[in-house]
Amino acid sequence: MTILVTGGAGFIGSNFVLDWLKDDATQGESVVNLDALTYAGNLRNLASLKGDARHRFVQGDICDCSLVDRLLAEHQPRAIVHFAAESHVDRSIHGPGAFIRTNVEGTFTLLEAARAYWGTLQGAAKEAFRFHHVSTDEVYGSLQPSDPAFTETHPYEPNSPYSASKAASDHLVRAWHHTYGLPVLTTNCSNNYGPYHFPEKLIPLMIVNALAGKPLPVYGDGQQIRDWLYVSDHCSGIRAVLARGRVGETYNIGGWNEKPNLDIVHTVCALLDELQPSAQGPYARLITYVKDRPGHDRRYAIDARKIERELGWRPAETFETGIRKTVQWYLTHQDWVAEVQSGSYRDWVAANYAHR
Ligand code: NAD
Ligand code: TYD
Image (cartoon, rainbow, N blue to C red; front, side, top):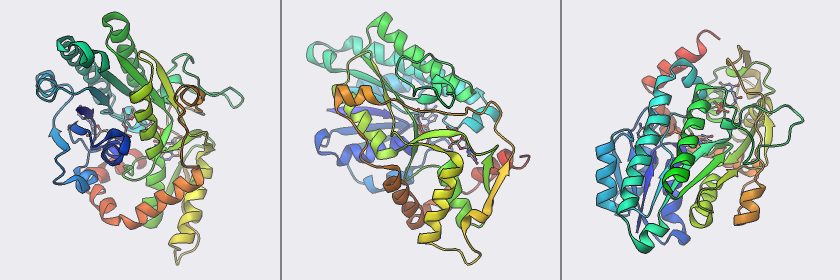
């Protein structure tokens, strides 16, 4: 038995592959990992799998239909778990084209390939096949302070090129189920954090900038709220939905951890003050308010009761345990940080922060 994972060299995908191959419940089921290795993909995340025959890495694009067709025919996976995406809101504002291509056209290509492949399956194999689409809470748009958290029936109101492209991909997945009967599952998750998080996103950016004595750029007033989930909890949620989720359903995954950005930055600073104090004084001295992100969503919050009620899933980490593990991971993986900060990363930081 095998599964095809797309985007398995990125932040969440690599955590998913590592956890999958460690998890007793998956019984060592092998993984074919299709990833284009964009700026966000990093084979170093998967270095511990070197020589492990259960992991087969294929560098390639999800928009390449003949490659995807070939991989499905050759490996006969019993599921596709689709992470591959352009994932950073700020980059989507600077250059939306790549988001439409990978998130919309790429998902379309995979759905068509999956539909053709599923059509060749018979009996129990056809019955068991799943296409699991990994999506985001950002498709639901922005909440007012007193609004209830997003349920699975919340209207789609995406506000950024990123969230609009993910919303489009969710709609395609839904349509392929309703029209063609493809056995799909969709999960919409809140903001993740943890090991291997590319330091363009809030938490790892704050950690690496603080350690380098650089400004900690807080957009606007820093009171925007996100609902944070430790990445291994997202991965266990996906495994639960893949194993036991009802076909055609969507499940929200979240950590019940709503926090304003400024609180997150202060928490990161306090942990660094404890674990690696700076001779120049508390890290919070580096906090710098900068121009806000255009169209910045004010608040996201996930109501994760459906996945708990139907599948018994709950996060294992609290924010306090998860953020401590995360800061410790960055402190002990400075070589990983140094490598991802080379070349194009510096160009991105210059493009995003120079005029703020
Ligand atoms: P990431 O940017 O870290 O990784 C994306 C991976 O996809 C990279 O390895 C990249 O090389 C690969 N990729 C990009 N374009 C590709 C293409 N055309 N073909 C093949 N591979 C390609 O993203 P992430 O944070 O790990 O997010 C993974 C998925 O989870 C995305 O679909 C994202 O929308 C979703 N998600 C992310 C979060 C979060 O907080 N990061 C929260 C909810 C949902
Ligand atoms: P981010 O990690 O980019 O995730 P998303 O936009 O998908 O939620 O940003 C999280 C929050 O942190 C978001 O409200 C924007 C804010 N932010 C900053 O204040 N400063 C930064 O330098 C970055 C990257 C994000």
